[in-house]
Image (cartoon, rainbow, N blue to C red; front, top):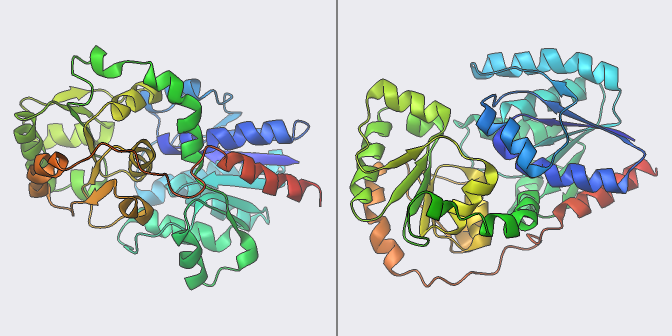
Length: 360
């Protein structure tokens, strides 16, 4: 069996690495080809990430880089098509909801190549978010939909997706977390950063709705005020740093850093008192680890994290940051049970499904 895995951004690596590993073991005589679109091209957010996760070097680098949604999607499709002609895959596997995912799904389906979608069925029900469009379109055309939470089943049913295309396998991002837990627990990133474990907040912000407009200066102002009460560590996404410089957002007291490798980031996350984010994946990682998460968005495509009691939606409202210390005062510190099938074995279940395809 010939499988092409298309990845392009930091979260894609985390979600896909255990799947590649599981399928290489299950189908050792198959051809496993990794295509890196280069949607995230910063070295700390791509090359180092791949090295830490133990993923083989990509066979093909498309180097699409940044640009508008149309430019990024078009470049990916244009550069991926000849790769698929060369590789002649039986299956194209795509993770998540980024432009690389949409472009790969469209390219493959137009070439009559079956598509498998990791992390299918998530919905924020906010179609102003580009990721929501990418999810809907990819799920519509993917032949095999790998679901990581139970609400995804109802979401797909509501869109008329046939049951036989759905496979409830669990969360492959948690597979990576489980596999690396001994390493990041021992990394001591908080101590290296000069902060006390369990006594600081970790921040990640990158979505356009927050960082590309007038909300960014107020967000940084609120974070600086919070830093007067507890240390605030902020590894800054390249996009966010660029916008902070453009609006001249002052950040007194904030501990800013370059983007971190995955082990160091997880070490900081696991030892934090809380996390403030607009990321989807971090909502899941904090839920598994039992870390309070405050999400600076009006909605989430991961309501399972809210039901677990670890994730609080603040709305797209920087002033809500001021309420985090009082919210933390009532935190018990107990680690809740993770959602169903978030057990480190999701990739094995995906491998079961794909291996069954190879024998038919």
